[in-house]
Image 1 (tube, helix red, strand yellow):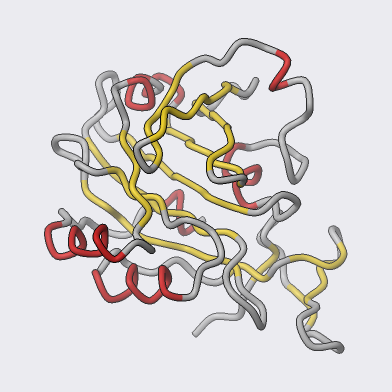
Image 2 (cartoon, rainbow, N blue to C red):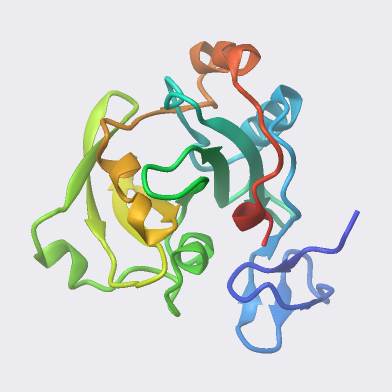
Length: 208
């Protein structure tokens, strides 16, 4: 199994000298990010059973899309950030990718996929009108778009945690606006969906 990498830059980490602390030369103490796993039901179930944050899964999965992997951060405790990847037919591109991240503030996994240089979105985001909404655990959840040019990146708050939704290429933003409904796989009733998931190859963006 490859060694974990920095959650922010994917650089090499120094092995903890104190239990639970991994350090990156560029970013100091960080959460270790483990390799992406294929979207088999047992991987998703294992991640869900050890996560301190939601494992968001679109349900129903958008038509023609497949779940393409899961990735998490974890040191010695529960995962503080989890990303789920999807692949599907684009409207303007032959193939589109989607990564959905739930994380505690200060981790930086969602920001790294969104292509911004901080761990969390700036406070100015919430001062603007939201751009769209998704449904997370049955609740309408506002999302704000971020000023990045090569992807469509959105962030909001669900269950007191950050919710990031990032699509590639940038022209595929409409999948985020198309009544996206998310369920948390940690809930027993939602784990029943795992046997029905359309599973595809590992997402390059998720694994990168």
